[in-house]
Structures are given as C-alpha cells and as structure tokens.
Length: 114
Length: 114
Image 1 (cartoon, rainbow over the protein chains, first blue to last red):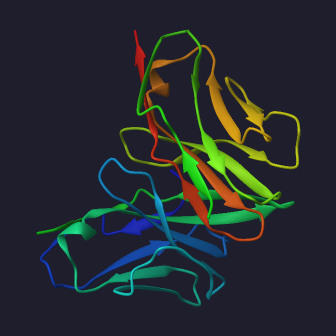
Image 2 (image 1 turned 45 degrees about the horizontal axis):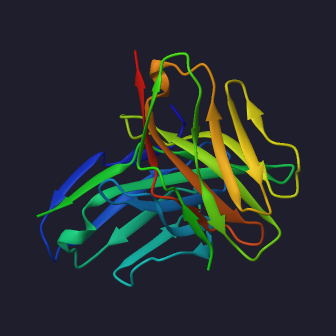
C-alpha cells in the first residue's frame, strides 16, 4: 500500500458524459501527478500540482482539467467523454529528499466509456 | 522533444537466471533522471531503481542493477536471480532535471518461467 488513495476504483459511463476522479496523496506530500494509461500502453503524463499550484503540464486534452485543493487532495475532471478516453488513470504523490524525488502511485481508477 | 524507447515488448527468463531489459532515450539535456518502474498484474506502479545522469556509478538495489551508458543514451535494467514475483511489466522513464514531466516507455512484459 503506497498510502495514495484514489476513488472510485472503477467507473463506467457513456460518451458525452463528465466524470471526476479523486486522489488523496500520502500524508505530507505536497505534489500530485496525474497519468493516463490506455490498454497495454505506457503511462502518459497529464499534469502535476504542487501545493495547490499547477507546476507541469503534459499532453492533457482541453476536455480534461484538474485542481489541487487546500487539503492537498486533487481531482481530475474529464468531460465530453469519448470512447478513446477509456483507460486507467493514475495519481501519484511525491516527496523530494536531498534533490531526489520519489513518486508513490495510487491503485488507479479504471474508466470505461461506452 | 525527449523520447524513451523500449524495443523489447516481451522477455522471458528462467527462475534464478539473469535477464536484461533494454531502454534507450533521446535528449539534448545534460541534467535528467532515469527510472525503472514495475507494474505487476495488480497494476500498481512500483519504483524499482533510479539513476541520476550526473552520477557515473551505476545504481543498484539488491537484485536489480542498471547499466547506464550516457553517451549511448542507454539505460538497461539487469535482474539477477530472477524470482516468480518479478513477473510484471517494466517501464523505463525519463524526467528532465528542469521540469517535472515524466516520459515513459511502452514497457516490456517480463515472464519468469519456473
């Protein structure tokens, strides 16, 4: 158990809908990353937040947005869903010690768009 | 733009034997980090080992070690005394020293034969 929690574990929805994925980082971790893993693919970096502020942005679609709240939990919002958005969405929190950053991944949210 | 390539979609190794997984990357930067992550059937992403580009010494973590060839932009993972629990997808990842964007390869599925 990494200490990072993600809810829900599974989500089934229809095209055109909007969903929200939630991530709670490890206690004390200020940084949250979001990744998308499509079937049998590597992870695609979406976005990173640090202490409430966006710090890095990857190939995140305009239909997707995220935020990190004062209590450091984060939400990823996916709207106007398409079939191709079906994937495993990971959240990771990280800590940096003496310049070395270690990411701790949550168990993921499996999204199925029908 | 940086890229990470894992040219071996699948590898097999006999239990107790040694196996090497390949990873090459492309970057024009001098400051970066390289990682190997393991993803077992549970889908949980687990950090196996990391290498800072400025360190000439290859990183080792118990039975896992890397062969970091900076000039060749190669970063292979060696697993010694392979165990059944090593069976998983292994992802190579790159992070620029100046940003927090991670780039993952497409993965190598490792099978361990009893």
